[in-house]
Length: 77
Image (cartoon, rainbow, N blue to C red):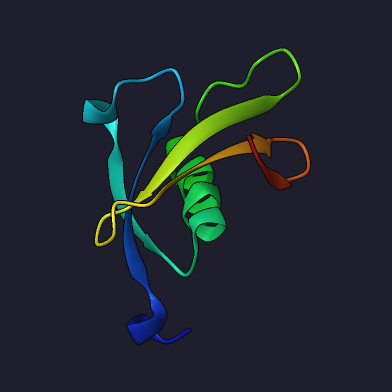
């Protein structure tokens, strides 16, 4: 994995304020969401999913993902 392809993202739970964001690096928005789940172990809802906002720190683009904690699958909100 080339570090030149890594981008910096701010990730936080959809219900959490942006001030609780965690800064991390990833290859894509989805990659950053999955790294957040692995590192932070957020609490899941009744469907064993967690909703996250992922923001590219350079561009400000923001995306929402629902991550299934049982399978690791991530889909846009």
